[in-house]
Length: 194
Image 1 (cartoon, rainbow, N blue to C red):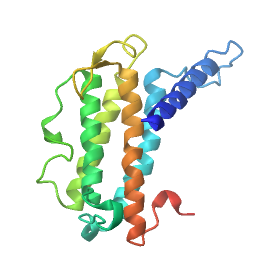
Image 2 (cartoon, helix red, strand yellow; image 1 turned 90 degrees about the vertical axis):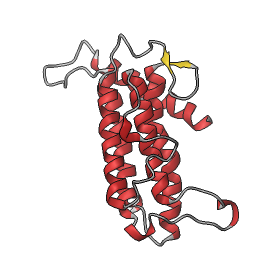
Image 3 (cartoon, rainbow, N blue to C red; image 1 turned 135 degrees about the vertical axis):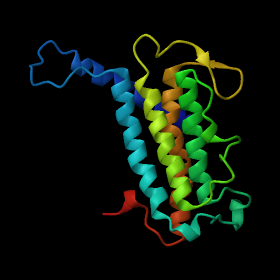
Image 4 (cartoon, helix red, strand yellow; image 1 turned 180 degrees about the horizontal axis):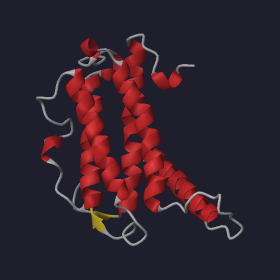
């Protein structure tokens, strides 16, 4: 939880500094267009996607069912379930931002549809969820970013900004597990390769 607040603070500072730089009256015509909340959030989501998707691709098909069982790892998700869980969260958070019901393809429960098992199916599920997440973030603007909306988790109210921070930061919670699983299988995560 503490990491989410730190990530939220960093994201907000980045967004505000980007907006402040774009509003500089000394800017010339060569200056890129003024950023929007959506464009700043989109950029951060793209960075998240560029980190987690290659990690999901790096695990061989026969290791998607891998889950460590020794020590403190008892009862944890498989590698494939970690990836599917990220996708489910993307759909849940994205639907809340859009004010829509969670898409049927997201399935029920925290790990998505049980029939999605192969690496190709899981990767499609993940990539489709990121496309949906991008659609959601592109809907955020200065008039709706702080508008109270229902949380997808429980009955609390939240804001699109809060959900956007979650959609950007949540995958990193599971990326850490994915990195551990990759390394347990002697695979160097793509982001760690020189």
